[in-house]
Image (cartoon, rainbow, N blue to C red; front, side):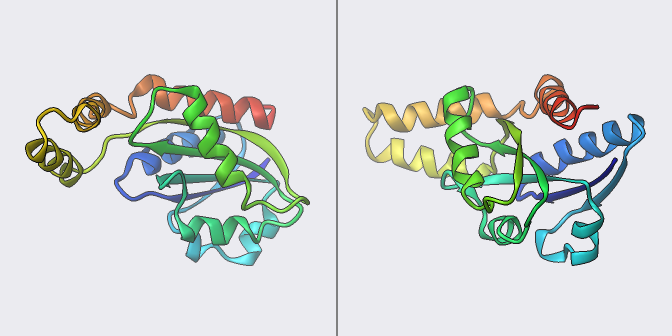
Length: 174
């Protein structure tokens, strides 16, 4: 099977998952073309692919505009979505994000499914949360955001990556 794996990764989390997907696809005997920038995907690569695996970082509950633009061009393709999000742990939250990203796909696309995991965030994010808490030490939301930031530091871990790889392989029938 010829697969196009496209990733839009801000901090490296989604790229790490994409690299594991490419490795797994190739070990399963599939051809995997990897593109590290949705804007760099050429029409020939899309046309040659039997399936497109699109990886994204979460930007305000959706994928970034660069990935959305690519997804909107995938007419008649089989597509598997995968992503990472700084906030995580809740399957319902991940499904909501996948639903938002899926809206960028045309009706002609065969949606194969999707999978997500938590990913670590940049240090500047924690500093912003700490500033919020410093302004209002009783702010339970700010403390919860700091706690989530700390929990996310170890993600994506091996189990997260394997979960997404397994979901993709199952969706592709590999």
